[in-house]
Length: 124
Image 1 (cartoon, rainbow, N blue to C red):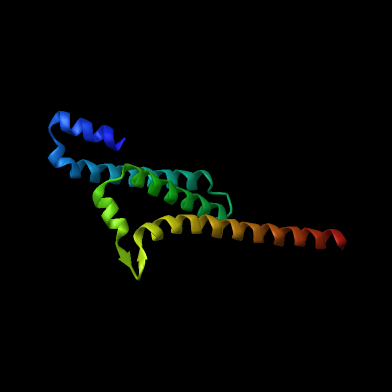
Image 2 (cartoon, rainbow, N blue to C red):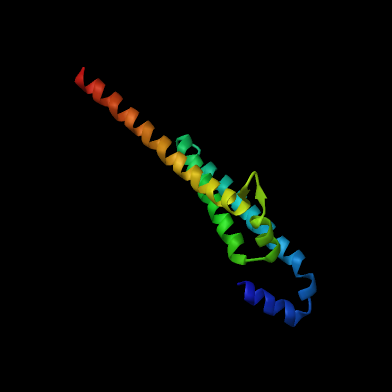
């Protein structure tokens, strides 16, 4: 996709101004992921909160993957920088995965509590 965009920019003569198009693409991906997350949360409004966290985490990871797949140099520079000793690349990717993992563990504990409660009721 990036190579096709580069080719198009050269042919149409706007290669020197490609950074604006790249930023617009990143903004479009971010907005699309935000709308997708909101839509998923509305659809899942009656689902338990752990499901919400999993949907948000999955959307974060998907957005990160889409932006990384575009492989823009200024984005590569940004995710290579560090904050508190951690690279942004790691922070962005692992936060989404961490949310999905947290949601999974939370949901599992809720199900275990529910099952133990129902077993107690059945015994009585």
